[in-house]
Amino acid sequence: MASAAHLSQQQTAEEKPGDWTHDHHRHSLSRQMTVALTPEQYEKLFFQPNQAKGDLAKRLGNPTLLGLLGFLIPFTNTMFACCGFQGSSTASLASIIGGWYFFGGIAMVLAGICEFILGNTFPFVVFGIYGTHWVAQAYTNDPWHPLTAAYGTGPEVAVDLAYTSGQGLYNVVMLLVSFVFTIGSLRTNVPFVITFVALDFLFGFFAAANFQLGHNPTPDGIAYADKLFLIAGGFGMVSCIMGWYLAIITVCASTGVPCPLPIFDLSTKLFRDSGAKTNEHAGSVRETVNG
Image (cartoon, rainbow, N blue to C red; front, side, top):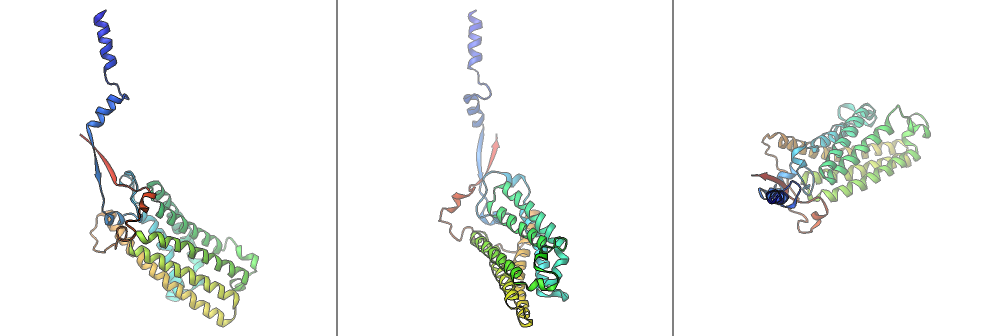
């Protein structure tokens, strides 16, 4: 009996999975190692001012390139039309609405959702907002959805004051959105900042052109509006150049191809002592090594 009682006491004293003692000894066999990525290395893969906490970014794919190309494909085509390349004009935009729907809409929104999963708030919002912007523009200008029927039929719709004022005000709001993104991009990299600054001017000149068409629908007024659209296209081409520059860097970084292009990182240059990074999922990438 004494032997059985002694054996029972030994069993109750043993470490069981889930007990504090067992877990304490188990964790003592592993060590925590912090892998600190340099800001430049991190910014080559994600347009996020602060590093996301956790290792999802290491185990999942990088959605930034998808969102970037989803924006650039329809945007570049649109700017070519605004600049009048190869005889195109703003009337040519109806022929590329499919790209607005699928590249600008589906690809960018999907990339934004993936950025959300990784904890990257800034690129998540950027891709989500501009992605839905493309869908809104495609739906508005799609011949299958005659939203302009409320303003009449034929070419006169393009100079109807009610219609052009609504379009102009929409571009003013997009200017405000882009300006907010410009402020956030100050801790990412220089090409990203230039992209948003150029978008600010682009939406501003789009708004001015729309207001001009509505308030001065004369031949001279329409010609002046065309010049404003052309200037907007010029600023858009600046965004295109910066966007494709970032696309080259990102695709090279994701595949390991050597790329001599500098990223011009700003995450350690501006507001680095402001403490603002603690408001996001800031922290180092942590890796557990068993042994």
